[in-house]
Image (cartoon, rainbow, N blue to C red):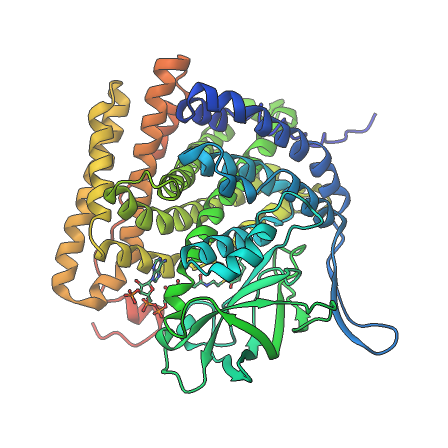
Length: 558
Ligand code: MFK
């Protein structure tokens, strides 16, 4: 009988997820836990069963842009993959956006919502992108009290009825790039009292959305982000005709089921959301939401990668034993598991704080903390996905490099996480912006120190102290760099952001680990905390005068 390797089997995404179950058991009061967990468990049934199977079957399908109908009419219709069509229904019916706005569980409603999203994401072929945008659009319209738009769009954006539900797009990126959005060139003109947009949006979220939030510069306005205005756009008129031209779908490295488009606005009707200036600032509520989704989705994708690799390692026989019994595999894989557990807690802490803000239960310190934890969670978890997922692919070795195992998708889809919604460097600068507002670093430091005080297990106490000392080091470093000027500060921004992200993750993981020791008599979270800290929390780097010579290959006299 010739040898055939056994394929990995996905364990139940909820039942097999010790980290998610333990977290929910700790943070949810018993009545909320009883109410929510069956729903989350059911999402696990779906995402590990029907959706996962469909994802494998659907592997080679791609969305298709149909620009013209048989009679020469420009239609710009996108034909979706079967999984996306199914995901549309599930997302509405299971309230993946609605849960946050129904707010059945007060400040814990975001934890409720994001536990569902965390399980849904890895089997959704990135249907979470339009959902994140939809959530961000709802939040932005509410924040700006754009009453007429809230009345028109919110019931759709938060509907549980698939026939009524809308998704929103976010069109920020132009040919000038997705980071320095203030350079956007789209022009807004008022014609007979109606605002209209002209320009090219170069990299949009899913173009299947019924509406979008976008930026345009009212004619004659000043340059930069302050001269832009935030607009609400619907993509079709009442007769169903497209109000935008879809030039092409992007041919991307990953997220290939997601119909990201390049489009032209040619007199597209638009409604200002809040005034006619400060558009960049006006769209930031959307960024807060989509960055939180990014962190949760990174944690979900990492969990999927770990679950598949763990299962495979138990099946794979090599050199006379299962891979899961090989000491070197065990060492290297445990490193990834520890990083994954830390990433989970950072992502969910952002969700907790957001929920507290929305339920108006957040203190001033928590509000400042939310502003900092949002970029930290986005950038920290995205970088962790980029280190963990390639290691997981390596566990599968050659099989992980072969498309029909489904493993390469994990790698491709992870690579987007540190890119969209702000790169690691852009978000590191955003973290400095958050710190400059005041109160955020102080709140983070106070929380990390309070946690360190509460820990009773000696190994956790050591990690707790290390986290506190990394935060102190970052705070001292910032003071010192402030005195040296903006270039010195900017050069070290990533080091500061990663240090804070890692130290805060370690502290959050310690809190969970102490609970797990006390309540579950389980040492795995403690082991994860110790191992995570052993990878180093402090990522601060001293300025290197040779950096420009190396980066730009300039001559460097000795
Ligand atoms: C699962 C997830 C799915 C995701 C799918 C994504 C598909 C879509 C594809 C894309 O479009 S990806 C590209 C997304 N682009 C970004 O996320 C933007 C990245 N760039 C930034 O975030 C820059 O930092 C920023 C554009 C905001 C910088 O622009 P400016 O004009 O230099 O901003 P400035 O002057 O620093 O800030 C303007 C105001 O906004 C300031 O307030 P004040 O005027 O009161 O001083 C800032 O404090 C405020 N602000 C900036 N960032 C903020 C913020 N406020 C709150 N939160 C923030 N994050």
